[in-house]
Image 1: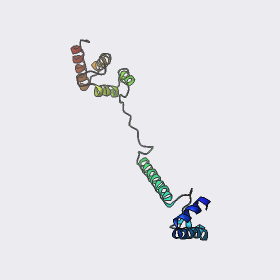
Image 2 (image 1 turned 180 degrees about the vertical axis):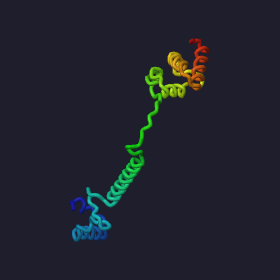
Image 3 (image 1 turned 90 degrees about the vertical axis):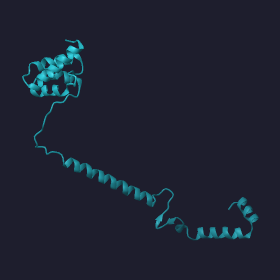
Image 4 (image 1 turned 45 degrees about the vertical axis):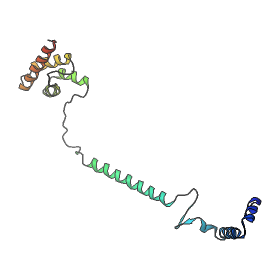
Length: 158
């Protein structure tokens, strides 16, 4: 102890001196038992019990996620299953290409993407699709053509 601490302890009285002496004696008698709590060492930079529990819980969650992803990938269709191809308009370029393709699937996609008022995205696309639908003998295509013609007439584009 330093000189300043010794002076402070002398001022406090003999009862405090006895307590300090017992604390110093216990630290010198068993230095290895001071750092132990419940069988685990309480090291200054070591891992405590809570850290091991957190790591175990994290590993359990990761294993569960891997299991879920593997289970969902196993439920997918086998590689030898026949593939189904459909045409869906996802971009503007595809919408304009439907009039060039002119097959049954393209015509069905044109009918599906037609707005309730008989138009498509703009007047140019409406005129183009109406011209393709005019040449189709299908009843649904003829109804879609008449809706497009009506829309173009109302808008003054015809």
